[in-house]
Image (tube, rainbow, N blue to C red; front, side, top):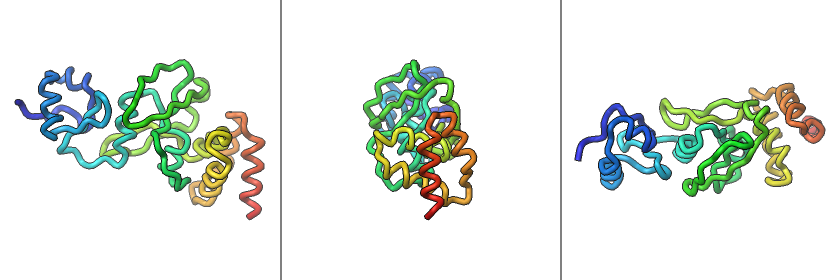
Length: 196
């Protein structure tokens, strides 16, 4: 069995390995010997790579490269919630194809394509590797939009934590709320949070 080629990135897909000339027999032999770790079906991480902060996010982002980490998963990244997330929550544009991802558990949200890029940024999931995620303000607005699904407390706690950070931008929050048609509830929640 040959060694894992140095030209393979720290996290890679079966397709990338094939393009690098790796035979599937070698790929699975490396997995079975622990030289690489399978993060999800067809997504691998080198055993000699530095530890990933968010291995599940890396796996999901390689399986669905047009997706963006959203909702409670994004709130957790931005430290806007203490909720434990049972599945990676991923936004995709309406009409986009998403493969079925059983592991790590993944929950897909379909957002309007025209506003999909609003508030999109990245988070470092492992040294030198980033994953798309909505910024803190967009995350708060999405939680307010979907509060019927996640509950009012999660949305309001995220809003309060966001407003208490030095990086808070209430004007940006209201801009996103206006563009995503939830300005009334967000304005009311901001007024209540500000009165405390």
